[in-house]
Image (cartoon, rainbow, N blue to C red; front, side):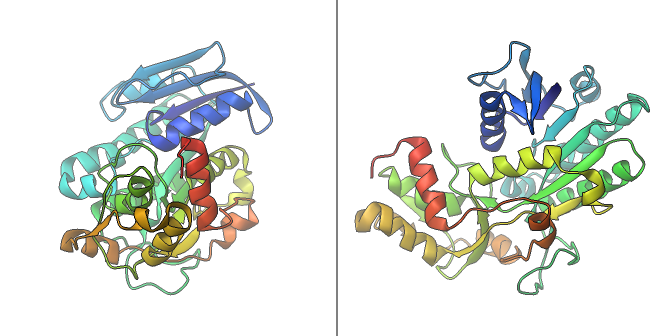
Length: 325
């Protein structure tokens, strides 16, 4: 039996992760005894959730909140809560408070719980921990030298994850996620949001803003793949992961032009015409400092699986959201 805690369960990936775990009724073969869902707003109870499911709202970065979250000693903790890239760049203090201070408060609460408690902590990181100049592709052992506040906050948290794991306080696995595309719902404040927007909005008959050039290349994965990464990470051997606890997840290197070509295949020329090009120097500068393609050897060897193609990513979005095209 396993008790899983998801911090950030009202976000897109957190919500889909909770739904998948509840639907399966287990986590990597272990029956699900309890599911605790937490976010800054109260998450919804997913269909099929066990009777012992709790949904609550809190700011886990505030003093005393992390201790409450782990009071029942969940065996698996998914830490997805974060201030996204664009917002972290604009609001420096908030980014560090949530992305770094909140993470450390959680780790400290786990450490203070005693030597007999060592949960698996799946930490959602980002490829933003890397900064230019880049080799092509970027190998697993490439230097993490981020060029955004968000990337710095994630890189610092990765180091904490490794050190607390080394000391035996927790058993951590860090997932450097590609940009998740196509994100359903409304746009968020991430600088990368347009990668989803230029697919999502036109397929829903709405105008989409494209702030960068068509030749921009980016590393992407679907929400479905992101959920799979987290579930697999909950059960992967810590010994197999080794001392370098964070790793780049597999994905697809896709240009904006290739995205638009896929959009045309599914939505036709009428969808493509809904893209409005309006260059944004701020977004262009942020995106220019992001990595473009990877050789995620470690993750692949450990059994993490990527999407087959960008067409498959868009097809999954259409199916899951029930869009008529």
